[in-house]
Image (cartoon, rainbow over all chains, first blue to last red):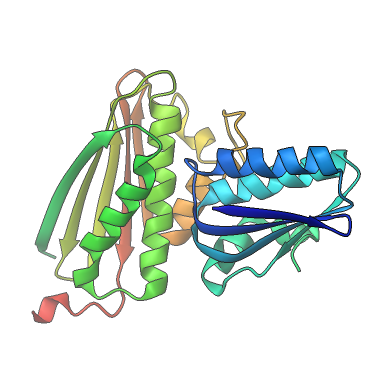
Length: 100
Length: 147
């Protein structure tokens, strides 16, 4: 689901499995708790282990973008699998400049 | 165009059933010989429709979500997702991208995803009676007709 580490002012959340409306709130809670306690300069969301995602995943990213911006940090979304590209393009997230 | 296979499914509007619903639909689609991308498209669109039924159809209670799926000899999958919930007062507005009535970090992209990931989306809704979303997806290289 999500494995979170902290190192060098960076919180890295490695997401795995399927992200939908059922699972997203738990992932959100874990990431936000870690960021609020560590106050990192950078939050990395690593999607390499995600096999399925609907628009709940887009909402999750947009919400983390707002959260980390409020904390003074920046967001990076990395390792988007080819099968998820379509929903990322549709979402317009590319325009936020967070996708690496 | 003839119906060559059909199924019906109903389940309680618990969010835990979202993964069950899309997996069941994907499994039923397999005889049409879809590509991996086509399966992913259908799973994503169904996940959006089922989530809408759960979140918006039954906002304050649990109800039943119904799925009816038909496969045709021309390689088309027709999937109806229905709830008997509160209904949508203005379907046109609800289908606008980024429109959402939920505060729970919903992106407001549900209908945009359904439209982009399938070939046809039809929505019928009546306030107090519920909503039916019909998705159609053509499976391009389907060999069903030959069997």
